[in-house]
Image (cartoon, rainbow, N blue to C red; front, side, top):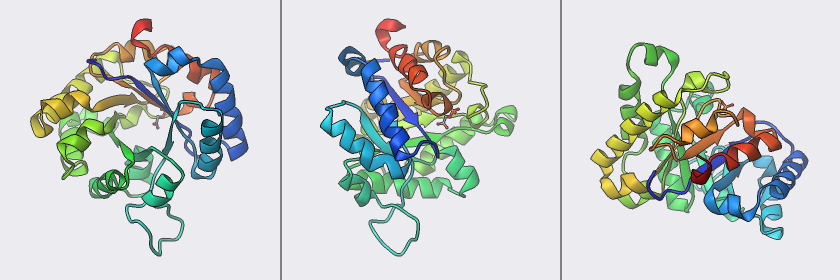
Length: 261
Ligand code: PGA
């Protein structure tokens, strides 16, 4: 990694009420010290219902974590029952938004085109998208991993400027590794991240490719984070299941520091 500060994001999915979310952030802030958060950017991505409570806590207690949402609608407002707009997130001082998580792609029909609309809208509103890409097991077994990643990058990030690409967070999350307990090996992660970085360089230029964070997701745990972040193009992690346990998530954060590697 050049001088990209690692990002460790906790994707809490549909877990934790706002009260449980507050408790978890308080507990985490007792465990993590300033040295940890200076070296690693910690991002909490709770359900929508907990965003306001977590934001208030981060602000009042001066806890230096980023705050993210798990999804958003690309339009600013409208008759879209059940949806949340970029402007609503910005008003809550949310900084990040996950776009195109594989659960949204497979369970809620999101396509690369949807992902693209959301990524463009996120930047337009001042949010940093965490765009998720990754192949299924079938695709890997058919040797299509690079083709799938290329398509997801090309279509999903179409029209973003080089400057936006430098700010973007891309999460490589092989679908077969999400929630399965079977993480990609460090070598598999290194290969995919290396490919992604090379494509970014080719399509968006060296500077954007160097600045863009490419983080890994899929069964990240305290005992595998070290070997994953040791890979030169792995700039941190998007952590699902293991982020629900505060102690475990704390260990993941402290083990993601370059010094600890
Ligand atoms: P997992 O989820 O860590 O539970 O595999 C990762 C994710 O869905 O982002």
